[in-house]
Image (cartoon, rainbow, N blue to C red; front, side, top):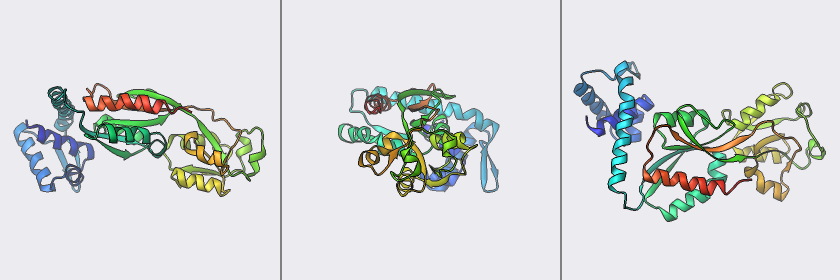
Length: 294
């Protein structure tokens, strides 16, 4: 079996679309279809069921997928071993989220840009569930998570730092002069939030479900901060994302402590042998992101 055919099979199995797989691999769709048919012919089995415009793996395809991933990993390990004395190079697909990309990762990205130009970093903006799924499937090499749990099924996890949260509002907000706040005190305060699926937004919403009306959803951190600064409500955000506004006085931190703790984490698929350039990324993420605690 050719590694090229297995790589194409793995991509189609991950995205369950010949069209999308062709786009991500840089092939024509006809080439992807031909490669899958060639692999099916070599194995003597159908790997996908065609269901109109949709496809799904057959039982044979399900059995082949873990072997295809292991052969891909072994081939990468062999390439790394042969080029062990060369300058680190190769692609790294990274799942991340807005708060980390904008506020935690710039020193790490700058370091690799200047020190290891042969390492090609691709950032994929996804939230927790989607990131974990992509890591298990092998679509991402590593992924950054910001969650209360630090152990995840099928993944190896490196905890980089606890991630402090801050409940913020405009200086003129009615709650800004309070010295302490309970959940009940937030009943009349409009809560502002980023998109659903974001861990701190979902946990905050669950915490206030008994007391507060539905969230006013802004989608991004920057939009949420602007809404809070305009006096539209209160927002729970990672403290690192509002440091500048708290310093300038655009926002103030309210005296409410979240009853949950989040951790910034780096994760990859359990059992996967990380190539040297990916191990280097993990090491530098551990060093540079952990140094930014608080």
